[in-house]
Image (cartoon, rainbow, N blue to C red; front, side):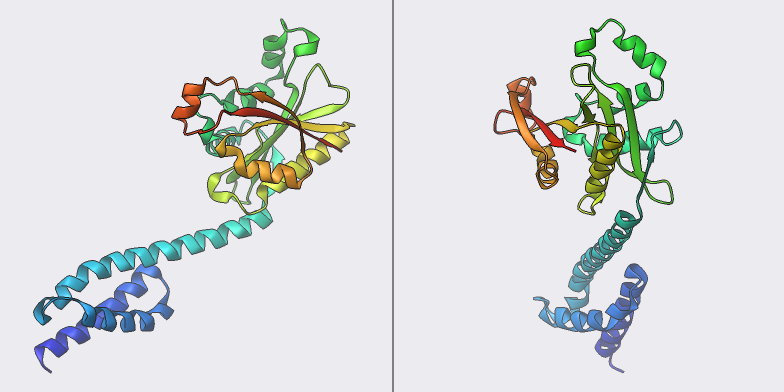
Length: 265
């Protein structure tokens, strides 16, 4: 066998082996071999240097193929998670994962949003009551706060939601708090499950309305679409209190607004 033929044959074998070992998908080996032949012949260098030139592009190609395969497997896994996710109360045991999930879901609001503070207060009612003791009844917020997490069977937390009351409308309404979904788990229906679960809890508490505050921040664009689909109407718009120069630093081209949404249950 001529040296060049041997090099070509060995190159094909190594390429097939590398593809199979890196991606874990043996069915791509035939396609990889065909691509190898085509790519080798298309290398714009002289014959002795074709394998050397192809080596760099082959490595990059394998890395890309592996990344795509892994993303596909993660996406498939998350789709399964979206169907199997369960919603359970926040506890001291799942608190760290709940905080991590909420911080990820509200990453656009760092460093002015602090879900950890409210989560911890809800698990210690005495501390929360002391914090609100000096506030008049009409302006008390986050009364009777409760939170839940969306988790899979392995305990991984993908989202959070909560309900609280305010002194002004305690008799008729519950408020949605810290509803968010991790960025890598969005589009799987978890957000809808969390909101609908919260609605069920509010109805069970005898509430007529579920209300929430949100904003026109680009980080909440997907949430606005969800709220509209689920029937939450905007009943009030007010300028955001965040200074405009900070809004610009955060990439917000238009002045932000706070939106008050509500839905009759």
